Length: 312
Image 1 (cartoon, rainbow, N blue to C red):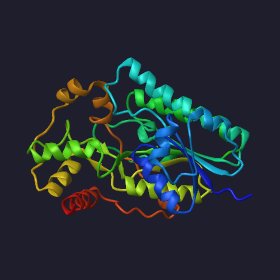
Image 2: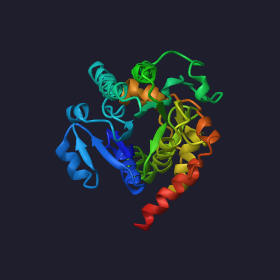
Image 3: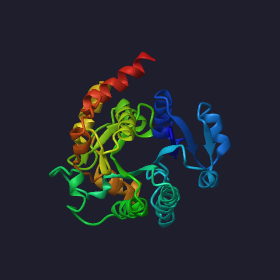
Image 4: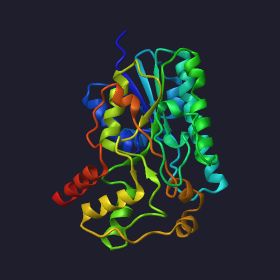
């Protein structure tokens, strides 16, 4: 049987929409899954099918080769109240469980399930790099994000036990040319208010959306790879290095430091875990498999982003 269909859940976001276009251009048949079928049909006119979650549960898996599950409430969406943290957890577990049930009934279907590098732990400053083989070499206090990732990844277990190939997509900070994070930074630097956050020594392990989409397509075709895969650039950088690179790309100084107390006051636990802490992570398994990054260094990426904007 020719299994050429890829199912993308959470496909309407910045990553999913770019991935869908890439796989369509590669000749894949696509099933896009989300909460509103009508909205997906309008966004993805080239998809073979657009389904809501109930529709996916009833859909035959015979022609499907893989499910790429990117679904989950944004960790940057709102302040982390107890209710929002519960929503972040349940949205990921519920979506993963739905995908796992399909893989249990059709173990030929690969499951590429989103996760994050928060699995490893957090450094206040810098430290030894984590590879995929360091899942249990954790550092520092346990955080909410670690608990979230543990539950998220553990939810894929029944698919592996049923014989399906499962890849845990441990994403770092994903940069896209038009996302809200870079837009905020560019406004601050444009107003001469840019600079490091906190001490500036915390590490950002990041990846460009271009490299992320290419890596996902690469993993679809390299079926010998399973388990955790770090989706980060080899050029992890300290926050102060990122600030200097942003300043150079925009032609602005990078000397106005945002104090830790202000970030905690404005962003609460989200700011503490996502902004003031970090971890140095390396994409060892991708590199060992021969994947080539388009943007291995943050300065190259930011210079290209802002050159592209100036050309528009």
